[in-house]
Length: 376
Image (cartoon, rainbow, N blue to C red; front, side):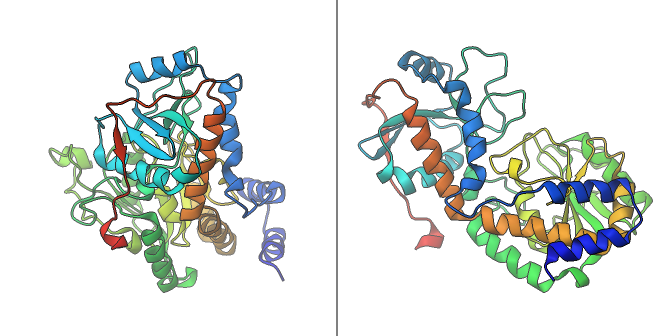
């Protein structure tokens, strides 16, 4: 019997509930993605480029560069050039790694890439500026690209990730091994969260953990802004826990940070059930992750969290099915080759919208491939 048939049998044997109905409806309506050439995510690219269907003029690009909303790159003769300054060098390096992997197949083009945390093109801006950003909400018109963190430049977490989370392909391998050590039946059946207080939206989870420690183990850690125990809700900051050790728990939580959270894709690989809080912030791969199919959606104020946790504890087989689908989606549709493929399609399609031939700026530096330690 297939896993989908097994799930339907389980659901049919359960008393009706609003959560069961939502899961049934979502899984019945879900159409799995194709595995071919990152096509799973191309609807996002199409939507992001729609405002530019009539093309981009040289004047529009010059205005975008002049506004300083990102780093200006040029690809001329299959070589990559960049303006001399970059606000976050490690982030630019992460972006450049992926462009250099496909630069030999790209036409001449120029593009502005924002490596800040926040998107740069609010919905009211007209004409729409062609700016690439890693994350946005529906209130912004930026064009999403796969974040630099797939290679380097991710948030440093001392002492466990002093230089950032590191390469996605290597972290995938580590998390897959940890998931194998902690299969569903061996996992601790409670919610787990460790993270800093970047937003007060996380407070209800921490307070629920103190009230019901058998349900949730959630504590705040220290970040650079920490000044006193007031910043960790009156308790000493907890010890940082590596992501591979999150796999010990059945239920893991994802919150937005300043923008979309870099944590999300990692949590799925544990084979744990992901509780995703809020729906506003997106990365390029989020739209194909479906609530109730791949994860449990949680209201932004967490008012439904206790009920959701009780539901999954009482419906363990249903919870496991969702966890498996979420894990398989990331394993199958967010590989390094998918990231490179998306970069190539993004830049190729972007170049077709330019209504002029870019001219190389003589004061720009050529960017060449630098081998990382893990490549030596």
